[in-house]
Length: 150
Image (cartoon, rainbow, N blue to C red):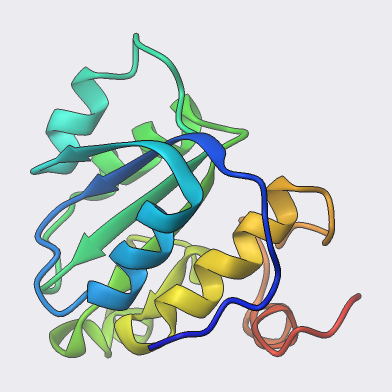
């Protein structure tokens, strides 16, 4: 379980997309810090809801490689330019960064570290921390996840 020692204001809206199996800590981090959480079974379902209120934070749960299509991911990123997006991936997806790049490196995080990343993204939303650009390289991602300010 990830401890959250910093009291934070709740964000208005968060989305959780996909199968949350083995993503409990990440899901709990989102639920604890969002006034409203909307769940979507698939990315396609989430994309259909884009005409409604935009979420502040999106947690996408990825259980297997190529679960999401590049076109869907690009549409999500283009449609929600201000949202903080975290793709929490399970053990079957560990090689995705080496064999395919559907999600930007800056948005992908292993399931066991997703709750910590979500807390960092909440700090970004609250203005307590600089955001990690979606185009960040691996070194920048490591620095962000380590909690070192740039």
